[in-house]
Image 1 (cartoon, each protein chain N blue to C red):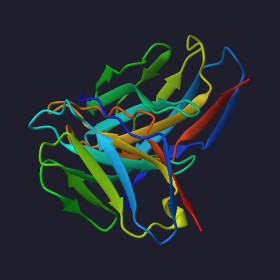
Image 2: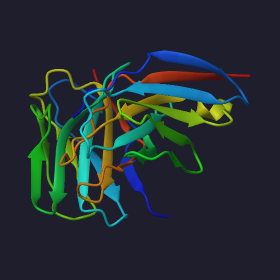
Image 3: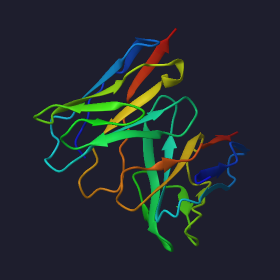
Length: 112
Length: 110
């Protein structure tokens, strides 16, 4: 089955700790994206990558970092600099500039 | 991106058609209208998109007005599993990103 996976589904961390969220896709898509969603809100773009070894900041990149060493993988690190990291994090992929994006199931991060 | 306006919520009876409106009065001539939905605690799912003509697929139909300033997503026979937040999005013609607003929360009732 082709698709996009995120792990873990739920993640708990103590304040001040960095945490890395996994995102993997086997759709052979060049582009990958990370979004954040707060309760009752829409999605906001954190980072995106259109090709391996390249990525760009989205609308709310502060306190986050990413890497894109492989086409299939786009991990997101939530650093201690992110002031309010508790949220639902969604990863997506697409053919570059195709607005049909495929989303993973999400990771719900809670910082205690 | 062209701004879109959707009602915050609507109810629908199971088995009936659900008609979801969206206003996008500032849309440009080459910008598409996209619809996604998000079932609670899941990732969004693409539904359909269109430019000028009406579109239909296995999930829904999209009706775009002739002046393209508004559109309607039609779920022909709503089921309880269609309960979700529905997003109407108009990305820029050279834009990579989707702007998800608050959407319309659709509740299908038995």
